Image (cartoon, rainbow over all chains, first blue to last red; front, side):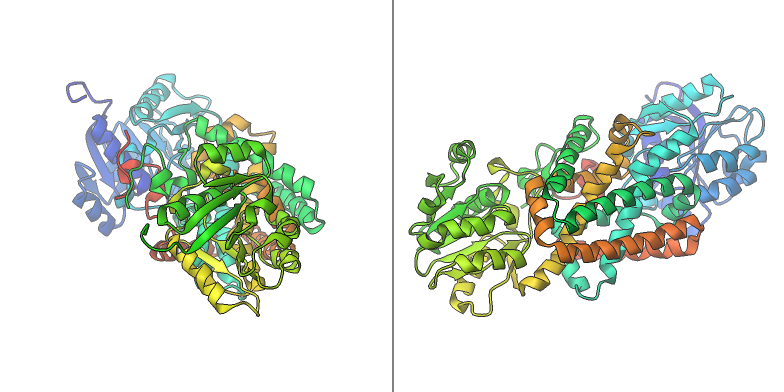
Length: 317
Length: 317
């Protein structure tokens, strides 16, 4: 790749958390930029990014960071996208692509679009990838490999710019899909936002019990509970903003979930074994499909037992 | 171990699913029995157990299997424990230990105890270990290593028999705790039963949507949803029986969960960012405690990314 002209002359990474730092690694590994400019407001975080060698240049000032960049990526909580767009808008280079990685798209479009000057291509995006860790140390180059990135271009988007951003994500190892922002937000409400909210909630419920001690919850967590704690360890700021900015779709999914749970609860109360068996049977097929689609590893118990985990894991005993 | 007298002369494994077959492997590896008798009703399953070499003798008739055994372990759905106890009771050897591995203990005690003849030590038990896989092929020797087994001996239990069963589980790699059946059932309702029910429910909710297609749920499942599908792929018969036999404790936990969820839902509806942030912050500490207690691996994203998964995982690229 080093012999070829890089896809972008200068990429400005606004925000250097899990996604920003993973992008830095991927861009470097694949040679996708002539120069990587890393920006974050907190001096301490920026210093850490520099220690990790994530960029070629480091800025606390976003307006400085975006100057002369032909690709600007906002990797910040969705609630911060509007204010940052207002700040950097006047400094964006003509012809540049401005994108983001936020977990909701409707509010990002309405918050950011008004600040984008003519001649700049604003193409919202969302890589469906992550871990429960956050900060510049959490990133790694292969985060996007085999995962999907959803782009939600506006109706008047320049096809050439969309194609170039698609090439970028493809080079990062991602598969790319496009859809409108509203549909994105409903899809994510069920596949991501509801699971996180439910996980946060159940961990909170367990934490509040009087009859069962915290130490018992911890000790016996291998019986199911611990699976939820991974999602419930995600970044609180990010998830607060997701809840605030995708309210309607999340409330819709929560309504359906609660309705279904009430029905299940009734089956338990009335001892309806046949109904419970039916409900517990159809869900197996969903996991099989996810494994077949390459979106999940097939190791039993998430590979926690190296002895049976399969090819990707060696015995650590 | 082979030079020492084994802990038991003959162990009868009634049921040879995930737990039964894992016990067979562990007993063999640690030399805990002079003879392993494997029993299951279905001829096909028994044949598979024999192909896998899980026992020394194979029976479809439980009464034949328990004759002369000094340890009998029921590894069958909790709903089957009462009928099987009624069947085998008259054939149990004087001085034998009868135990089980069921996920609920109150109903197992009330269903099984009446059928246990004098001179037989009935000590209910529950290893807090498992995977989402089931059947005789799913077992492996290290399943119980580092996990907890809870024994719920009755008030008149023989201390020597309890100590011997404790030695057995310890030899299988487990840590052992005792408590009364009622407390066990409340602890498990929150750490295991509620998580499984919630997981089954959310997968069902997603499967029912009209606005989001099944293929979209599958494609984008890496954003959170897939974590729930592991629990929702567990054995439906087992979980039907758990719901039927631990009804009161489960309904209590479901009530608390729904109450908390309603409060979270209200915070989302009214845009109460501070409350959401607080709720999403305190749950991080729970995961850290579980990792520190050795009940969870510290690999980000459950080690799905070999590149960052840590010492137990090698790069499979």
